[in-house]
Image 1 (tube, rainbow, N blue to C red):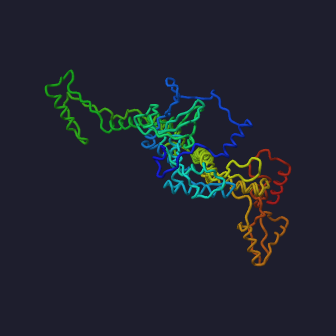
Image 2 (tube, rainbow, N blue to C red):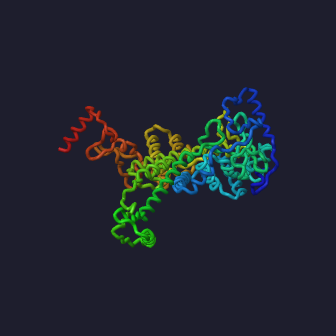
Image 3 (spheres, rainbow, N blue to C red):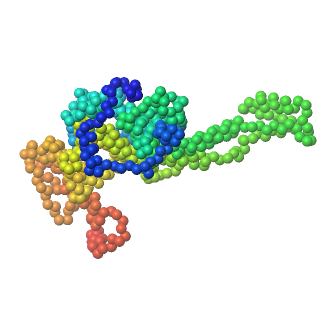
Length: 539
């Protein structure tokens, strides 16, 4: 009921029963003894169990999510670090893949329907999910249910109970307002959102202050969740104190600069030999108050003036400032140069390695989101459409499972990998199908696929000229160089060059006996003989 008040469309009344086929399969597995067992020894109840009332209550997060949100919104370093994460995360895009094209098309159709019902694109929604995951390491997604079987055609084997509660929309619950109720086995039994700010820090089960959801209506994504805990540990939690220390140090530097710009005047009136006369102190105060920035003081012999803070003897805070900046950058999981801190000295090689480390961190987030959406969203949509994402373990039929797949964000690494896989294929270390799978291409070609060599063959056939085998190389010639085509025939690319030119390049001095790798043990007789022959030829 709580969800229906907060979504732009209504849904049917909740049906408590489940699909009969699923229930029968579950009973059969139990009868065969295939059922996970949970013991009390692994439970960690935390604050969810009330010893006085002897009931399980809602528990708040042990982390101050509002403090984290304020840090992201107000601190430039934290904000830029998360902006860097977000930009790299979505840099090269994503797609949905699967073995069964019909299942993939069905998932896309369901996503298109949800976009129109939610009034939000899936890219925008996933961007909000990732932002929550970066900030809090927790994301709570509520499902809105509706019978949409008439809008999207799946398989016919959909039970009526399943049709009534099909997923029609997804909405993010603000993480800082979520409380969780768990049972003695540490399993969530209720999710709730606190709508009254006065209930912060309290386990209030008053229904007027809570909007509740059943566990099956909420997707909880989390990172670094300790065993027995209900919430994941935010990564930014460990750096908040460092951010506060850096801000305090910067405030001290600002105060120091202000004091240096506007020094303190110590005006001594009189001394033991010449005591101050009546009215001298008032005149000195009036002189200092009337003093302008470009002016000065004229004092008699019994007056002395010292300007404090203008001697340049203040404490050098540059090292302290650099230290706390580095702590903040490391705590945020980035390198200082990613935040625009150019004070640190590093060469190009170091920065490239640091970039790769950041890419690996982003790929970890991408991998988690891929697996989470497969289990919590795609599998649900496929089951609601009559598909079987788990597949048949006893047959070799393709699975209906669908996967979210991100493209490589490091293009330089991608090019190197692709060249490596092609090289392995040319060296017969990989088959054609294996190499195409490594390149994320379909293993088998379809009729009409236009590969370069096939197009060349079609051109040759069109002009009535058969492709002749390469002419034999004369002795002493360069084997890497392809002989020219016969008269009247088109020259084709040298595809017979193979990998010998890469591993054993040849120049005017001959061919190397091995790849260009320094090896002080290469002292074989054949190597010495080749060197001698080259020397004789040069002479």
